[in-house]
Image 1 (cartoon, rainbow, N blue to C red):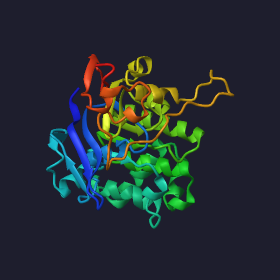
Image 2: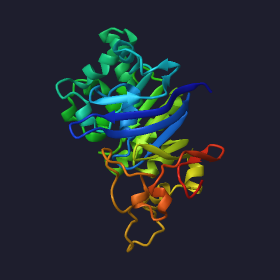
Image 3: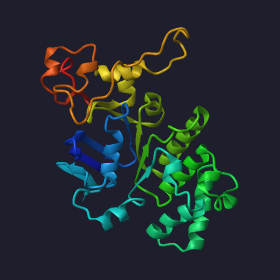
Image 4: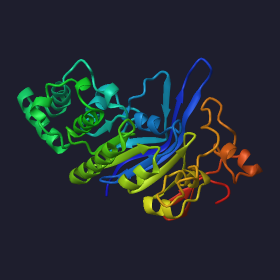
Amino acid sequence: MAILLQTKDLRVTFQGKEGPALAVRGIDLELHEGESLGIVGESGSGKSVTSLAMMGLLPSPPALIQAENLQFLNMDLLTANRKTMQGLRGKGMAMIFQEPMTSLDPAFTVGNQLAEPIMIHLGLSRKEANELSLDLLSKVEIPNGKSLLNYYPHQLSGGMRQRIMIAMAISCGPQLLIADEPTTALDVTIQAQVLDLIVALQKEKNMALIMITHDMGVIAQTSDKVAVMYGGLIMEYAEVVELFKNPLHPYTEALLASIPRPDLDSDKRLFSIPGGAPNPKDPPTGCPFHPRCPKADAYCHVELPKMKEITVGHGVRCWRVL
């Protein structure tokens, strides 16, 4: 399969009055056509910033994006101008954002918001765009689509709004779909339906998928490969089955231990990782996880370990494994 997206040493720094904040500290990723990659980690780990940098959606300033390589279909995203990126977004790569209520414009109807990218990217007339919009609503399992085109976002439930966002994202047939915490604001039943829908559409249209989440259960449901992020770095990567069977980094082990399981005693508290995410303005020396790591030794405080492939396709950034 051809390489669709490639990043090498991707770094994102936000300049502020109190000094620079290192949000992303060197990300290497490679995604092939039709593959699904999960990026998992706590809030503040750099997941969303990584995806927004790929999409060219970070304002500069304050964001400074640097990379040895950042390419989509051999196009250099670092040097691409605004017009090129506008043409790429929607048709080449598209994004499902975290909160559909703030992502949809409250002043325009669903029909207007669905038709606009179709008319811009595919050059269709308003009538043709409306017909395609109805087909898209059917694909995302929304009944009575014709009447819904005249609705405003505030008239729809959270689950319906998220389905509209999915329909907008796939409307122009992107080769890469990025889903940034697409089920955060939804109840459990609707979450499962939305995730099933995304996976089904990805396979039907042979899109590549990047699923960004803090939930390891979502990764298990949606992804072939997974990258575990912490403190702006990838700490471990592997095939999903391999990662769940044989986690190597203490942070990955902690994330897996925090998943609710039906076989656990109901009177026991669910495991949680002590402490909080590192401050990007003042990251700890050495491994960024060492202040919270139960297995850290003195050397973990001193030097950041390099990523090392332990077995084919399974790499980790940890001194105790190297």
